Image 1 (cartoon, rainbow, N blue to C red):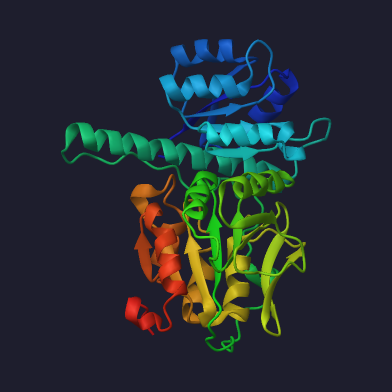
Image 2 (tube, rainbow, N blue to C red):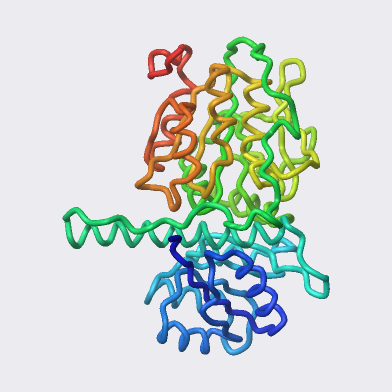
Length: 387
């Protein structure tokens, strides 16, 4: 029997609380244990029953969500998913929530509409499940540290909802671009780095990019985020990193010293025109239930960069990027995966490893070092690439 995920919804709007409850309880593996109109009531609910995940608004009366989040993380850390309309305008306020310990962010479901779009509902459900897995991982680590003995592992929630009806189909990258032809361009001296991340990825990406030198090869990143929020994320990274960081726009060149962040709700593809790499930002179906999709980015890299690409897959729920990384690997790219110990959720990297598409598994704090090393290595056979 699947473990039930208990959720506490904190929002000052009764309509939003009702809407989120309806969305979440569509999935039989999720139960909204309580709702609260502000952080003070939320604290009382937590004292009565400990939730697995908290869904938290940012703007509320009596105490704002950021202040509550910081107090929560200092006294009783729990996985928090920020659910705010502020995210729709890419507010920097929500960035502070991620810095304060939130594991994911979603936009509030639209009110006044009969029902919800399947994509929107599934995104909310997936965010809660990803946050729940991050909590289970911390509990497992704590239990091992305290007991130092063998014991039954905590059950992990099954991925995806148990209800087949009303669930968006899980499509692969074929709906956006065809599989690689196996005729990717030959090795050159110019490298390009493709990175995919999801739950827990905002802080993992910050750590990774901060560690890279200013003249690192051009990087394209897919981080699962709501629309319009990626611009705020890019600005934050740009203020912290030695490389220049911006939200990707179709036609942007992938240059040394530049990081391009895929915009929310659009797929981003790597292309090549003559001697330069560039990106194309396109509409399209959800791929692996995501848009942007890591699988789409990685497949485009396998097609247009081949052995000139370095692939990095990081913390995240689900399997987006696993098939694309295998295609990159087959095309001659060198592929890296973040290890389980340093992941918030060891989903995407684990699936990529399982498919045989990963050359090396590394802790988060070694990924940047290896990208630099690979950039300076002519023949990847010397660093473990199997051909």
